[in-house]
Length: 456
Ligand SMILES: Cc1ncc(COP(=O)(O)O)c(C=O)c1O
Image (cartoon, rainbow, N blue to C red; front, side, top):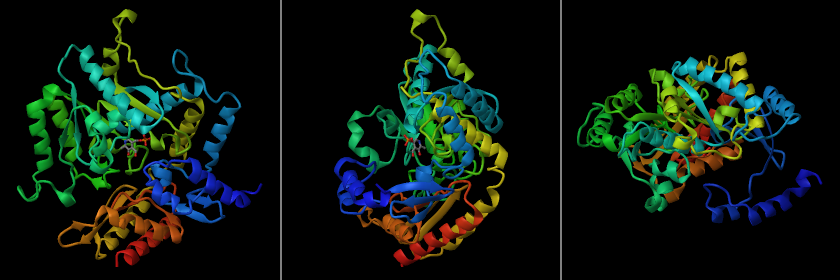
């Protein structure tokens, strides 16, 4: 049966059986679902044959575009050999090759000290692994009492219970409060809505001072700090001020707390460098990567640790120092092949070196958009951007959640052929890095018009 003829049947089946993530299903059931059948470059085609620009890289994963020949070929070649075998007690060729290439990329960006890589399969698991490694590291070192973590308000690190414990987005995380482990929370470096503005006006890096107060009082209880470097993505594309990340690193060193950089969203060029930590020459103790790692083709994640963390887990079999953690699809050969090809394309096409003009175009557009009456703040880090809509620009009064201000803009943009997904009142833009200048212009025009017409 032709797909188009099957359309109604598929819509019916979707509504009958599928529970979509981060979706109020009552709303979903009342709408016609957009069903994707095909992708090419930075475009997605729906079941009715209409093409849309993929303005959020299919949930921040796509890097070099859809149907990228090199990635297609790598997966096809690998599937003729083997689709999956376990990493528990075995290894496989694509995962080993990828480890070599990935460590080269990490070391080129952040220096030579991060060199032990643990595979898993999504951003949340990369974070869970990082938290557990940090926690158990101190046990192996004979340090007791480090039973807690330090994270940031507005942080998002994934949806598993460990990741939620270090999360700081109230509407996502509140319901699970009673299940979560103890975490200290420092202020978010959210300059537009600075927590300290009223009590201590003028930026004296009060958010860092607040963090230091927590560390001074509690570092003996804190195994690690976890942070999204430079930009809190799901929290609303909150860009930290220059020097903040370096300050966080220095505090971790000063107070003997490990630093976990969650680069699940920022990794692989999104911020204009391979990894966000590179912008401030920061070396974390543990690095979490996922999303763009396979260019948006297949699920995969890695947690990279410094040698001394890995070494602490070495011991005799009976000593039980083993890191008892692993997932069925760890180091999947198909995903590894896609990820290797993705890194090759970065090198061959000089993906990062070519981002400059696109970032400049985005910045100029944000500057223009920020003049609109309900655009409170317009910010970016590389090709990650957000426009925060407010009811009142003078008082910064936000729109109520139920007003769906961000969604209204997204739906308008969809009518004009651009797919985006907002974060509350923040209109998010995160196109594939491979987007052409022409398509970038088109995306910005459509979203700009949608903001202007939907917010007056
Ligand atoms: C910074 C960060 N960490 C972790 C995650 C979780 O990744 P996943 O959805 O693959 O579990 C996300 C997802 O958006 C993220 O932005």
